Length: 595
Image (cartoon, rainbow, N blue to C red):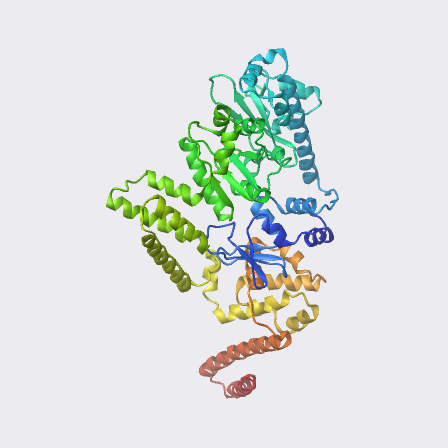
């Protein structure tokens, strides 16, 4: 795959501070010189994910993952390196040159065409909604009391029969490959091109920039399936977008944003002047959708359907958003199965009142727990108390804990002293466990573990210190190290690989550590950022290098000493023994001087 030049990559990197970029995905808090947060790549309760503004790297001491700003984006967004550069360039308003690569150019050209196919289709379906033959759709629109303004805002339309769209797209000059890639048309075994959506109310799905990326189609009779959605393709990944966000962003959504299940929930609420609403594309909220929510608002109101699927989706969304440190509330709705039905039945004001009274996650979980237990039963009451204590013990803020204990004790007629006692016991136990366990150790691959068993911790520490000094990018220091420490002197295989690449880059005149990191394997990136994230307590670099060189010299002398002793034991020739004894004596003198 073609890449941009090092100069362009550096320009993009320097224009995107790693702390600013990662803060869009992870809630970070400053601690000393670095920032820490909960790792987005594995589940954890205590922050072990470190971001260094000075070194422009991240490293998780829990799962071992690490890298720079490009590495982070490739992992969190599921994109490749070039796409990460493009995304960050767009963020920094940097115009990138066209990549000179046939594969990349063809892919970008196909994406551009698919966007145009989608754009035309959305317009075509919307216009089709007003035609005489679309009476069934018009009756449904009238029944739902949707205005022309709402239909236009969401580009709602109606799909025709069999291959109407395909024929229109061909008239516009689109090629079969472009049409098929969009997912709007299928090709059957007989070679016929058939529209995916036929006689359905159409909901175009847009990205945050307003580009049409996919469609959802709803039947207007009792046929199944009720909804058909676009398959994932070159421009669409359903887990990375939220329906209606492009419309909601035109209004004030900074303080609060509602997330619902369906397209019609969003449209219906918007119709009734509730604009701060979006829907997840599918019932299960993803991490990427969670980031979109957190980056656009302060408070998230979960308003899923009251059926079993809706409740499951609600619990899943809570877990994801809580791990991101979001302020979450849960809408309590009775008398309707979803927000669309509720707002039509009871009106805007009553729905807004529900939103204002939305309860916290703790209150929601306590309520669900209460419904499953009989507090008249001693055993159930004990279970209730224990589960509540577990929930409250996970709250970091002591004031918040106190408020919940007071509220729950009063509401459920439970002794607050009993809750306090159990919470304190759990908190103490967790604190004790953390002290015993200490800082989480990085995850090491199985192959690396086996190889590492033969290398002492002192040797690994020394090698890591050498690499940490090299990673300062100082060419003069590199020259001193190169003259005294050869690649073969590194015992730990991964250290040897990294040292070899660093030596090679320095020899080629490249001392830009960030660009060197870009060209390392995932395993090497994880290892090198672990080294960079550690504090080796080096106050005097030159003295540290001298000490390390002496340490290497000492090891070599000791190794040779053992070899001589073995040779002396097996040697029978007097002249050879005398030479070996003289060399051994010289080694002992040298070792004494080093000590």
